[in-house]
Length: 270
Ligand SMILES: Nc1nc2c(ncn2[C@@H]2O[C@H](COP(=O)(O)OP(=O)(O)OP(=O)(O)O)[C@@H](O)[C@H]2O)c(=O)[nH]1
Ligand SMILES: [Mg+2]
Image 1 (tube, rainbow, N blue to C red):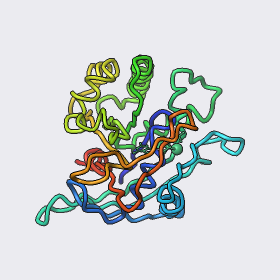
Image 2: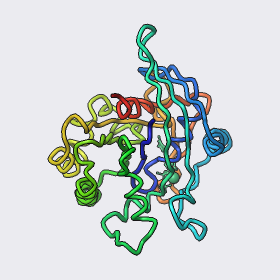
Image 3: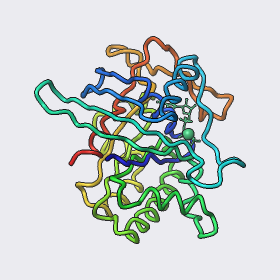
Image 4: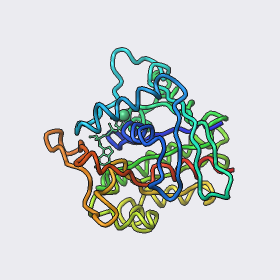
């Protein structure tokens, strides 16, 4: 099994994360080494997306709720087998990851959800279904207005977990994405204290106040990463033309993602 949902606001890097995970299908540059094998057509297309877009120095298009998207089933659904190894003599953690690529828009509207909005209620129902192990929640912005908004939004999400009896049996991996950014890169070592405890205090308090500690963990990750082990400059260029929300890879041959697998490994651990 391995139904995990990946959610987060617009432009938090969800689709790029999935493309990066698929492209590095045999990766040893992380604390664990891992292999990723696509199991359906959509998942195979993610590798092409990485090759034709990210590696070419372009940005992946936002996932949008357009005219052709009426239900969650119209959104891409990816299925992979992932094998994670932590050492030669330890058995691998093998998971089948089934995940839908939701647009950030549906996450941001959690507070406004009403029963007439089919796709929004379907989104919540699907994320909190009984066979979903947990959720990877990506954040990238940290202004205090965002902190207040995310905190309220997560209170609502947690209330909906409770309504569905998922409060005590649902894991939440909360990650700061794009952590190659200079001002937050040092905070990656202890993201709970040095990222969430500094930049998203209200959000942190809401989560810790309501969820069992064993089901909540904080991560920092970056699909783009930095230029090298001894070169901590971010491997990205900001694309200011798009309002500062878009960035592209700076040096494709030096693409080394940071910490992509760790949240999945934790979410799937028994
Ligand atoms: N600096 C940096 N930018 C990134 C990283 N990952 C993604 N991005 C950029 O962030 C922007 C948004 O990425 P997406 O993957 O489209 O984000 P999303 O969460 O899928 O957004 P929606 O589909 O709109 O919900 C793009 O310009 C990406 O190139 C990263 O690790 N570092
Ligand atoms: Mg997307």
